[in-house]
Image 1 (spheres, protein in one colour):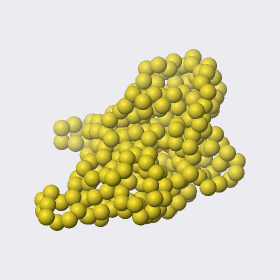
Image 2: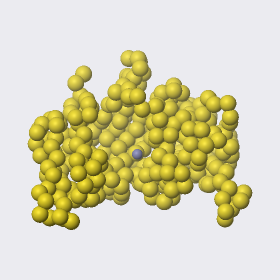
Image 3: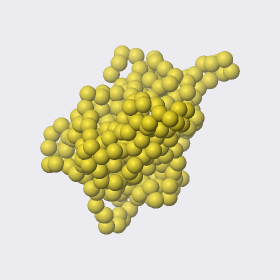
Image 4: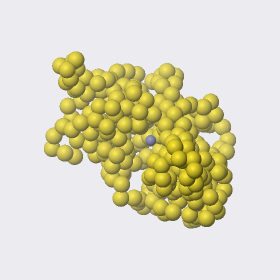
Length: 335
Ligand code: ZN
């Protein structure tokens, strides 16, 4: 933990029982508001003894499924429904979520590349610091609901890291199984220390993430899977003892084994995909063409898959620049 402490003031008393709603007040002194603050919404329910869980949406502001599912949860849940403490952030990077953008329009901050943050830094850095060094300090569990956002689309997928020990791994696997998305993803411990899952790892908090659709919108099918998954998770950890989960449908566990799982645009232009989400592909197969309508006499650039796998993620906007991800693959887990 850094020497400095947060300047964010919480309207919530984290020790009080009941249902509280309000804002994390992030000081933001600007031309039109000298003593103003940015309102990061937070809801807390507490009812006696039990685990503490933090639910996060709007870490990336253009990922709407989690923001909708958690808003509905805030409407529905009452303190008597739960055991322990449940903290819900519907728009974690509030400026980004308010603008419907992946990153904050105030500081260009990508919250999920900002942990552990800085209590005296930019708004995005201050939020990251508050989550890691104030909220996660209180938590046993944290669940961060992402999706493909504006530029990508995924099927409903529950993600987790490999546990540091067999015991931790079994607990993380149980969370992923409880959520019961059609697809599950396990990522190896990477060098990326700035993501929320690493913040959880640093604080000894058990966590799970999702990729829930995307394409800059919300669909009834994905939202139903998200809401069902959240209730199942909260039941699994003991927060919602009265909820009766239906039979599990099963989760196809997949992984990415290397950079060859990604297909990137090699040129700028207009992308024509040759396959769809969830298609099985083979190494060397053409993934799509990048056309050049500005100079239509120039032949299109063809992108290829470099390995066998299933297309678990696909780019949405048609215009691409060199370096944009147009597909990434996953393969069944090799245990
Ligand atoms: Zn995200």
